[in-house]
Image (cartoon, rainbow, N blue to C red; front, top):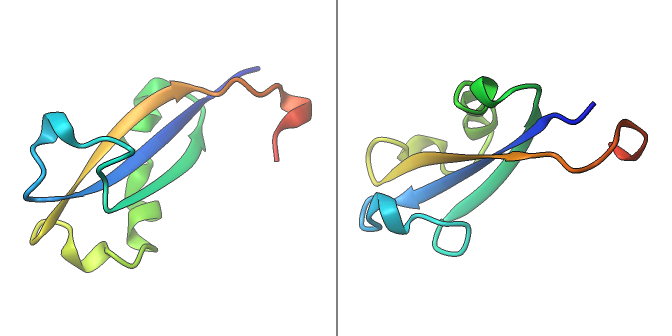
Length: 77
């Protein structure tokens, strides 16, 4: 069964939302989730453990991208 990967981008407020990408983000993290809906909900814990957590809402913001995880169950890890 294939799940999804939530790509979590932490972008500086000076970066317009439409230009916040994996290349322009100050930090990029990811987490495996079961559904597209979980892509929008599972990032808080991941960001909470990041070095930039105190900057969210002050000098930076979070944007998530949801992608299908192409790995099979045997290849996860």
